Structure formats: structure tokens, C-alpha cells
Length: 146
Picture 1 (cartoon, helix red, strand yellow):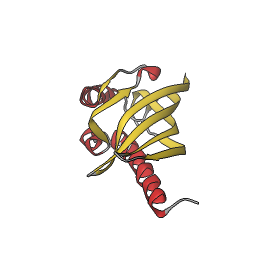
Picture 2: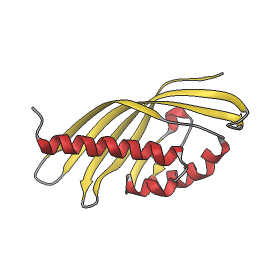
Picture 3: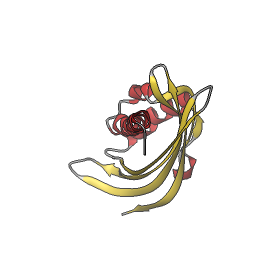
Picture 4: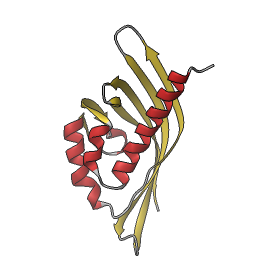
């Protein structure tokens, strides 16, 4: 049986994953400062992006994503594992993401759509400010342009 502490940790991590998707989908890239640790490593290469530190990737997202008139993230299959030891409370998760992205056009007159399916493999640490992501790596499932 899960303890109340573990239930709370899992829900907080789930919310952090939702906060990531909400920040990206609403183009509020500064909101990601409340998702990642400053030294977090992010690897988006599996889907054609870059890898690097949080600051570099955040800057890249703000430059690249405005080229897409519309996109969204649908996440699920939350698999969260929490580890407690004498020095820290950490966690790992794997979630699936369905991410359609409009290529050209506008929301009113859509262009082609790229359908992306991917896994996010993430690592977290509990900080004084709450849970933060320290690592995010994408694994490609599929992509298709229609």
C-alpha cells in the first residue's frame, strides 16, 4: 500500500509533467523555470531537436517553436518510481506523449500536420521549492506528416 507521502509525491510529479506540457503549449517558456533545475540535462535529438543544459534548450525552444502555428501535448501512462535515501528523495518516470504539430498555415487555415509519438524518460529531485526535473530524454515511437 502506498503511504500518503508517496501518493503526494506521485501527484506532485504528475502535476510537474502537466506543467511542462502547459508551458510549452502556451508558449510560456519562462514557466519552465519552475519545472527544471538550472543544471538539468535535456535531450530532444530523437525527434529532431537538440540536447544540452536547460538554459540552452529553453532558448532553443523559444526560437524554434514559434515556427509552428499550433501544437499540443497529450501525456499519459505515468510510470513513476520514487527513491528515498539518507541524502535525497529522487524519482524517475516514463510517460508517453502524443504531440501533433501544424506545419505552415494557421489555426484557422491549417497546413499539414506532423503527428509525433514519443516517450519521455525523466529524472527528478525534491528541492526546497518542490519537485524539479533534472533530466529529460525523448525516445521516438513514430512520426508521420499528413
